[in-house]
Length: 451
Image (cartoon, rainbow, N blue to C red; front, side):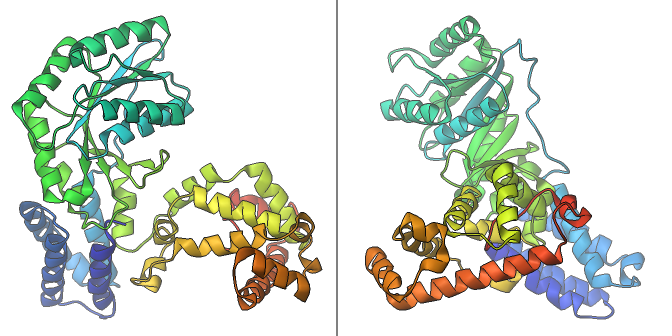
């Protein structure tokens, strides 16, 4: 995730604070020096860092904190609160017009920031919520951008309106709105042209659209990997045409993350969505409090549960639970669980959401390709072997090894781990109580097998 390096440094600072019984003012000031250095290295705006550190220091050396039972944890609490304040006290959502009216969203941004992909992701999400969206292709300078929008629109099941490259964007939008009225479409997403850098022609084009169309929201897509440049781009767009919010892309990449901590403070505009991957489902609402928790290594259980609930079929989960209880879990079930985990997104991102897990893993990256070996092994089995793991003897293992191109030792290791997991799951199921017990009913959500 974008904040991995910052998170590691912050956690090291606070680990030392928590180890002290009582805090002196000098301890807090020394810790804040390290926090300041970590934030600057993460490419957070200098003025933002200065104000942040001064505010935290002032609150942290107050009498209530210094004489508290656990001053180290009190300081961490203050840091988290100030991080949330920095990114916005709460989630900022798009408030849509009634379903019998058109909500018009104009997406703008520089070329390469992920604008065309993000607008398709967003349209797909609102389609799944019951809206009737339309994507409008207004990048008249790049035919490839129109083709990309059409491909992405087809993938998310949203129609695309385009008139090629021979009409002005404002004309295309006006025709698209007429088309939307005829087809009872109540959300229109305008994909505007980007440039490699900000220029007056682009701004004039955007202003012309806004002057002639009743745009409900103007969203700006910025690339988190460009650091402070992303903040400068956001400020310029806001000053020139006025924006309502930001979509921050590539937050899953190897970037320092400073843009997320600076944009609201510099522009006064909220980050509304965060792009966390290349899949057309990898766009999340931006929750400042959850992001602050992840930065400080506290995990993000709420997002983890939401991802799991979206990925897991509840009827399938109930049937799986019954199989686990009776120890009849087989390799077909294992494959189903692998697919459900992969639907949740990048495994390293998932692990970072589990409280305390990032500090245990350190800088260790979980190799996603390791998940392909179990799949290859299972797919080399017969249907009968998958349904009944106990059938697999030495000769069958040799055949499976040849089929998947792995050494027999790896087959043995996988079979042993599978059997141990099956026994452990049965014990855990028994420990949680019988079918229908209060303990079992209380949860409502079960993490997939083995993860």
